[in-house]
Structure formats: structure tokens, C-alpha cells
Amino acid sequence: MKKLSDKNSISKTAKLLFFIKYIFSNLFTFSFLPRKKIRIFSINYLSTVINYTYNRKLYFDVNYTSEKWHKINENNNFDFDEWKYNIFDKRRHLAIKFLVNEINSNNKKKISILEVGCGAGEVGAKLISKLNLDKKISYIGLDISKSEIEKGKKGFKKFFKNKNVIWKFLYQNFFSFNLRNKHQFDYVFCVSVLEMMNETQTRKFINKMCDNSKNSIFINENYETFLKSNPRNHKDFNKYFVKNNFQLYKHMYKIQKINRKNIRWFEFMRIILLYKKMKLEKSVNNENL
Image (tube, rainbow, N blue to C red; front, side):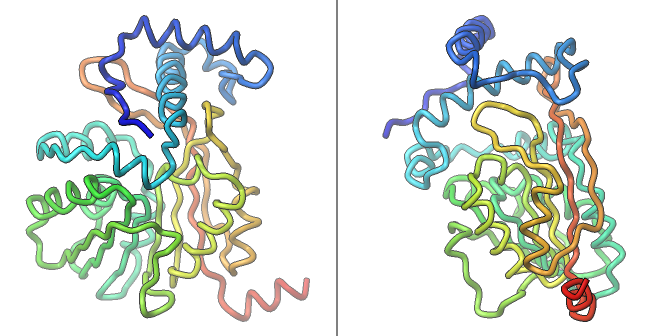
């Protein structure tokens, strides 16, 4: 397994030529058409699909989803300004309002949150920055990239000075994640994690999320048919969650922008879901329907 070259060093022309070649080589198995066909005329969408086709092919040629790949391709360079840019500028349009409102409406004095696939903790930091910090927030970020975990620790240490924010980052595979107490967290969430998993992995992953959540689970995932993606709609997700006594509380499909420095943004169709744990009485009643 080899170390991945810097994808940002590849020219736009090279990526475009790769994209065209890939389309004609995989004419009957690959479609770059968006779900809303009118978006095919959007320069931002075309730029997104060209870049992501190149990047995904590169990633999966070297088994991007394996822990071994992440160990080989560790990047320990940390820039605090870049970290903050990724929170407040790059992810300015990240749709996490469902989760923010759910947590802020909770009257508990202490809230526990688990983010799975946290990377450098930038989404977690964005979430916490939008919460009412009159209550204690206990956040744990989990990821299989050691270098990203270290960046998260450095970023949180410099960024959060409020004593009501308690945080921890764990370098661990979620499938083997196990805390002493079951249903340890009030809220469990992930962003852009499930789209690259097959059905068996997705089922196990969602079961694990449900096992670790007391109240609610939030998901924000890609809904585009990019290369190597497995986009699922809310009905696909429901069949996993219902078996774990979680019901869909809110959901939406939304085009989300990701800002890029000095150039056009990327745009994605996203599926955003909030699930709530069903009360025992309700679960029993549903089984009798």
C-alpha cells in the first residue's frame, strides 16, 4: 500500500481529462447526472463532480477506508488559522441546525455528545460554538486517523476556554468502540461517514450509534451519486433505525455549499436526519400495529 500523492497539486485540466476518460471507460456503470437534472448546467456542480471523481478514484485505488491507509498517509502539520477557516468559512453552510436546536432545547444541566468520524474536530467545534453554554457540554470525538485526532486536540485546546466545555479525542475504530456504560451519550452524530460504507457496514455502524445514544442521533450525509458513494434516502435509513427503537423526527434534502479559497465553491445534495429514541410504550404499540 502506497502513500497518497497530494491531490491539490494536480491541475484542473488534468482532472478534467481524467474525468472525460473515466466517463467513456465506464459508460454503462457510472453516471455523473445530479438528482435534480437542472443542476447539470451549474458550473459549481460540474466542478464538484470532476474533482470528486478524480479524488475518489485516487483514494479507493489505495483502499481509503482501511485503517492501514490512514496510518500510511498521516499528516501531522497543524495550522490553527486553517483549522478555524475550515470551521467558519469552508463549512459556513453546514446544516446542523436540527442538532443545535435539539441540544439547546434540552433542560439538562450537562449534555454528553459523541461525534463519530470527527477528523480534526472542526464540525464538533462548529456545533459547540452554536450551543448555549449555560450548561456543561461533554464532547468526545472519535476517529481512525491519529494525525487528525492530534489536530483536534490542538485546535480545541486553543479555541475553547470556557470551563463548561469538556472535551476528549479518541484514536479508535468505532466498530470496536466500547465504554463501560451502555447508552453513554445524550447525542451521537456523524457527518460524511456513511456514504462510503456498504450495507453490512452501515447496518453495524447504525446499530452501534443506537447502542451509544440515550436520546437522539443526527446524520448529515452526501446524497450525490459520486464515484464510490452509496447514497441512501431517509427510507433506507429508517429500516435500520426502527429496529433499534429510533424514529425519524426531522429530515430534509438540501444543496449545501462548501467554500473554497479564491475560487468557486463545491456544492452537494445532502440528506440531513434527526432520529429520536422511542419511548418503551410507543415501541410496544408500534409492534402491535
